[in-house]
Amino acid sequence: MGDFIVSARKYRPSTFTSVIGQKSLTETLKNSVRTGRLAQAYLFCGPRGVGKTTCARIFAKTINCFNPTSDFEACNECESCRSFNENRSYNIHELDAASNNGVDDIRTLTEEVRIPPQIGKYKVYIIDEVHMLSSAAFNAFLKTLEEPPAYAKFILATTEKHKIIPTILSRCQIFDFNRISIKDAIEYLQYVANQEHITVETNALNVIAQKADGGMRDALSIFDQIVSFNGNHITYQGVIDNLNVLDSEYYFRLTDAFLRCDISASLLIFNEILGKGFDGNHFITGLAAHFRDLLVSKDPQTVQLLDVGAEIGEKYKVQAQQASAMFLINSLNISNECDLSYRESRNKRLLVELSLIKICQLLDEKKKQLNELEIPPLKPINQDKSPVNQRDTAIVQTVSPTTQQAAAPQKSSENQSRLTSISISQGMPPAAPAAPQTYPETPTTAQTAENQSVEAGSLENAWKEFAQTIPEEVRMVNFINANIPVRIAENEFEIVVANQLLEKEISALLPAILDFLGKKLEISDIKFRVKVDENIEHQHVMTPEEHFKAWTSKNPALLKLQQSLELEIN
Ligand SMILES: [Zn+2]
Image: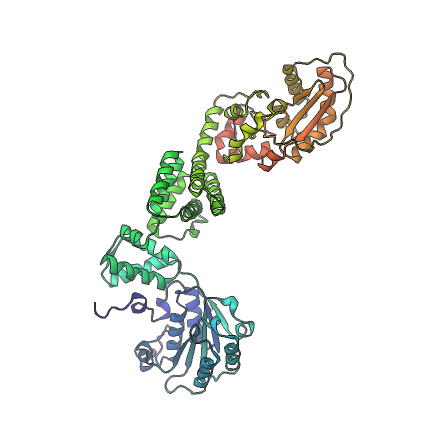
């Protein structure tokens, strides 16, 4: 191995056709060669290692070739081509602006431009990292760029197009290079491996391509690094260990655990990952990416957004079929939230674990809902029940378990007797009254009646009866059915709602409520108020319709059940 040549150089494409992942762009360049309509200056933009300099060199070689092929590629045989391939052509000049960014460097170059080519037609000047030129150098260069001799062609390359001044941009034909897709990178790595007689596992190449993040040159350097380390047989495990990459297998296993609602397994897998020295934040962003990949794999239309090798792509498709889109979206949300709050969190490990538990519970909740749906108890619970019990008996619950719910019981126990909170068909989180909020002054009217003593049971009955008087098309029917007001004084009643929208809707019914209840309960001077609990609003409580819509889209069986039992939804 005395004369080891790095793969990126050894396998540098020598024709437009062999350039990886830039097909439309190389076609355009070839076309301009064919038609002879060459621009004076080109600007090649794009990430590092995607073939900008390579294309510039091929272009220079091709326009100087004495014998272009019928396909308008360089022949690689004529004297000009050979001098190019052997790096001894005088018709190509490369300037790395990253290290030669002064006026003097540009001046040397512009003097050079004045000398016409000895052999061949064009002199090509490649200025790499052109955004690094000092502004004085830029200005000195501008002159040359404005009126270059016909034989001079400029190819400016940059990774940061936005740093190029408009006067330069306007004088160049601009080409935007793509990142190399994982699939293309794998294919090329496979080609190189075959040429070098190296056996590889496809999954291993996938890891390399992912690590290179769209750069072919990087992919090839990593490849060399692995070969020098592992010899002529590249295994998936070898690459994972060598690059210290978090094995995507973990994410597949984790997702399996989530789908089984297996909290213990998910926590153990996370522990294993931490044990390998991976950072929790790295893990959680990887998990989010995994959910994203699963989500795009679900839909034939979006599956093209999945940028992985074929073999692992199949794994994604299989796992995607096992998970519902709703589950994936919710999981993606949870992991994303975890990522966002990771930096501020004091107990980072706990934060991640909590997120894993939440994801595990996503489907568990659904199961619970389904179990309970088998018994259709559509009887509203009374206000004495503790919020915890109410949660248990709730038919339908919020889709994602939130921390607020866990915190709610404590808070609401303080004055639960004063509040109507969750209801069966509503599935709203328990009302969590914090410090008394502003009580909107609601109009009260008086009704004459003799008897003012009323039992709690009859309030409930009266309320139910009232609910029946409301026309079905009124959106509040379901809410009223499910939420019973609380009696807070002899002639005073209160109902707590989650948001101002509900408040408005209930308030609109107030005259009817007062009238009906006053008569039914035989209370004169009856007062009824609607209280908005900002806390609940903050928790973003969905309206019944929204809830039901979310559940049915997740589980069509709910809709069937609702129809067969003739349950009412607004
Ligand atoms: Zn040639």
